Length: 155
Figure (tube, rainbow, N blue to C red):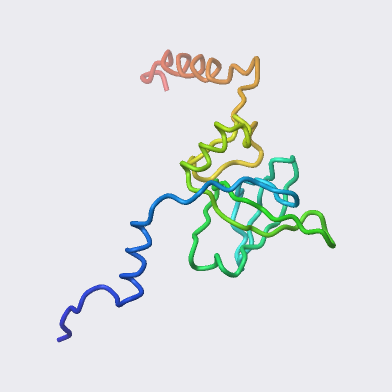
């Protein structure tokens, strides 16, 4: 019978040391870069991002980030725009941690309606705005009250 010998080797120990590292400096966008929020993962190192300039782009995770930085739906990323070819393709340069994204919002770099650390987001969503005059909840309450008035013995 095999004897338990721990959980990994030197690379695991190096990974633990990386977690203890101090905070990194906040990077702002420059020319040819844009902030974006990941809408969904497409596979093969590609994601669909909603950029802050109002365009939806298909982004590629750069090689240095693959299998080292895990990107999920709803994450805030820095995108490098391509100067050649298609305008709707870009490259992911870095992923912001949740606290860094909140700092960007405080500095006014990100719009206030962007949800941070909310997980998967709906691309058809109104971006956190409640439409005036939508009383769907009131209608549902009225239907439930009418259902409660039905006599079960008469059915």
